Length: 211
Length: 211
Image (cartoon, rainbow over all chains, first blue to last red; front, side, top):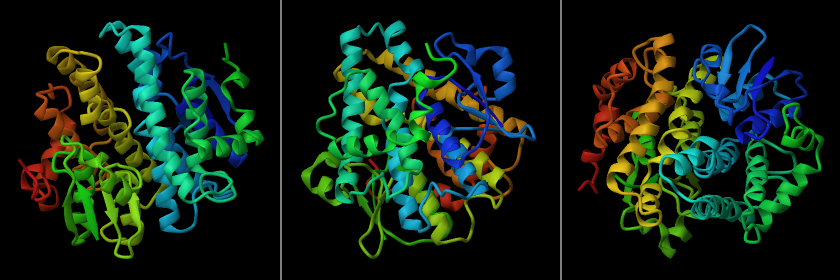
């Protein structure tokens, strides 16, 4: 398999974690988002969407959207499972992952922050408040759920889809110096994940294209 | 079942479509997002997250995040299926749905547009350009995929998860007067969906709380 990704893209990191948890080897193909390599005609032609991450299967089929990629990996490589066996458990894990992937991350990615600065003329202080508003508020929603049903990882005693989403979001929160004192269960789960090789060995600073 | 939702929330409409496709009866409980009823202590206590939509099962269990709710409905009420049988097909449908749910919708919902106006002081013209940028650009990504593999609905000859996401997004695009000339396959699928009762009977103007 080939994974087109960017060391600092949290959606890319989600997929790197899932591939590591599943024990899958892959070729790491860097796409530099800040240099806008994702909008090049070559990458648009390769990807069909211009989005990163992109997983290219051995038969050439291309999958995008990190959550869809991870579900695919879980369906085709069942062990270890990244979703619980029961429908209610799966709904809980997917909701936690989407609380991050739909409510937090889209508001703080490279292109949106670029638009705030370059097009709307938002200054750095206001941009920082924007980032903190969505990350800190969004993580509070995750915290409520983890506090209501605490376990070692987001759901139970093994890492899964929600943890794949959580850890890269905390990396971003720390990079942007968010307050995280109000989410102790989130940070406890984050620490449990980062103690595992699948999370630590795939972190941005460990990537071939790290700066 | 009970569905807490708001007539104009596109995430709510996604779930209304899925419930209609599955033939499930439910109680419609309105939460007025513009009046910020979702942040009331009562709703925070009911929902645990303050998010809309919220599906309350007959045993009192609460599910949130529209995509997670629809996956749950599809797992527990198998007919008619909202996801294809094959893993690659499911990955394609989920990616299409997430292209809308993660890349377009989060940037144009009520709270984000409110923050742009009230906190960042963005004027109406600039806010309209923001909305058009993300909706028109995001739908182009969907269009490429539908054009590459055209079918009556987003994937095949029956409506599914991606259509549940697509139709409410087009409603928003039209409400905000976006240009849709560049996405003919998207609009063709939209028309096919809106010809079905499950889509037309659940549209915002047909809701009990419609204004």
